[in-house]
Structure formats: C-alpha cells, structure tokens
Amino acid sequence: TEKVNTIETQIKDLDADIDGGEEEDWILYFNNAKSENDIQMAIADNENFELSNNVNLSQTLILDENVDIAMNIANSNLSKAGTGAVIRVNGGKLIIDGNDGHINGDNNGQELGDNHAIRCSNNGHVIIKGGYYTVGDDGKNGGNALIYCTEGLIEIYGGTFEYTNSND
Image 1 (tube, rainbow, N blue to C red):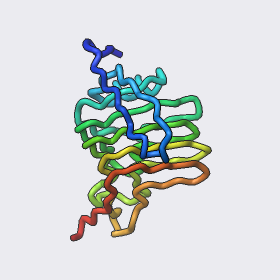
Image 2: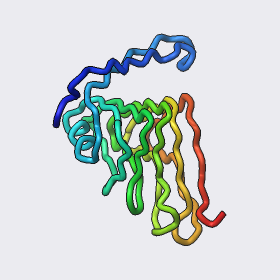
Image 3: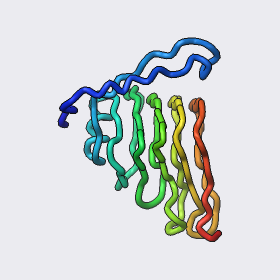
C-alpha cells in the first residue's frame, strides 16, 4: 500500500470528559485509505488509517483477534453492497473516530438478511467516538440491528444512530 505522501497530523485530542476524566491516548493516522483495497491492506498490516474517500465495499470488513487498529472515517461514507455488516470485529479491537463520517449498513430493502453498520463478536472490542450510523429494513420490511454485539464489548461515546425505513 502507498503511504501518505504528507503526514497529516490527524492527532485527535480526545476530550477528557469522554471517559470519566482520564486522558486518552492520541491516535496517529498515517495511512490514507481511498479504496476498499487500501482499507483491507491497512487491516492486514494492523495499521491505523483515515478514510479519505467514499467507499462502497464489496464484502464485510473483518477484524480478527490479531487486529487492533483505529480508523477515522472523517467526512467520508463507508457502505457495503448486499447483506451483512459493514464492519465485523471478530475478536479484534477497533476504535472508530467518526467525526462527520457515515457508516451505512442499509441495503435499501433490496435483499433479505441481517444488516448492521457494526457487528462485534468473539470477545471483540469496538469504541465508537462520534459519526453517523444508519441501517434500514430488509426486503420483507424486517428490522435489522444497527449495532449488534454478542460476546464482545461496544463502547459508545457520541454519534448519531438512525434506522431508515425504505417504505416511509
């Protein structure tokens, strides 16, 4: 993967009041992800990244137990074609710095299946710090879980979470 030509110090001084007064570590984002391939490479290399383009994934992003990364979705939109989760943390750890970015788990009622913006399982750990997250109904007007967690931990420190119904 191509490293960012300029090091943008996207160092986020996370407010101390987010976690009850303790100072958070700063996160450095040296990888600039513009495509699904860039994102997959950052995950494979266990490196933090900033999404700098709207990306419609062809498959779920899976973070296994060996992955511990942070992603900044900045002002971008991350979505996935078809059913399933946009991001599945399967034993790994993911910090999402949402800013004004959007993770869209909605397939506009086109296909049946369990759709989620974020899914966490197998002792996975997700920390959400802002952003906009959506999911809608499936092809038979069945609901989906926007954020789904089983045998894992999801911490939410801000953000907007919305269920969108394609039949409204």
